[in-house]
Length: 386
Image (cartoon, rainbow, N blue to C red; front, top):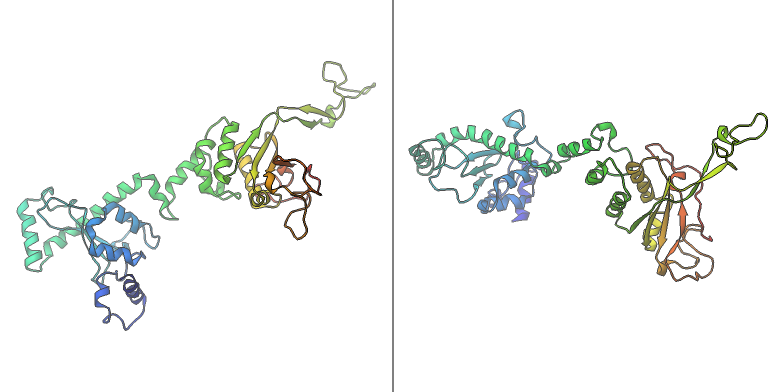
């Protein structure tokens, strides 16, 4: 049945000579003007319409971006389907009463509950009985077709009101990320110029909005972001000591023209001071050999780590990265291996039986502070043998 349905869709798109040969399949596949949905879905709709919820069905049809949003089309001709109410005296056993795809126009979906007819409708019951009798016994659907002019618009507006209130619905189509823009605005990233500015997908950043909207940034938030994004163990070591270079104008000098040389009043020895409050160390691992290579300099994942740290921490703090390699993957350099000299290999046999945490370097030295994060020639420091 699915194969026959696909053949009819091809015929409607432009093939000729098969319309008369496929009478059975044409009753189960849509004709011109229909959204490009799986033909099997239309076959199920025709055979068992009562199994489908109206809003879920319209949402599935609305997810295809080849037509305007249902309820937002400027003209009826731009809408890919027609909606109407089945005149019936029965209380609605289901939302959808039937689907008709036999006509030359767009497919027609009939429902039970919402409309002018029926026991819950505003019209007198005898009008429902009359419309039903004319349609079923005289093949005259004039009254119901006239009422469907209003039903179609009312049902689409009813659906659009529901869909706009469901935040997840805006992700169904690539051109309707309305709720994503709302969440991005909470992170001061709602403007178009602030999107797609680095190697992190905007949707991933929106997913982490719970951490990024907070004014106070703590190590736990950075750990959770990196752990969820990269799916590797993450640890943050705070208060890592570092040497901070003193500005040339602040260096202590003695003599008649000296400056900053008063003991206890600003005098310092040397060109740098030890600082333990402006740097932290980010540790990833233990990692497998494959994961380890994915975070080495020049890799996309390392660039994403830098982008995440800049997004969450900013440029106020200095930081360094430690990659921990699993002990079973830490072995000596071998010929014809893909180990990188100086980044993931050892000369001879590694004597320690613990995970290898030798790799420590500063990723910020590898990338500029621009949004594009272009690599520069500055080498990274490593304590590995090779």
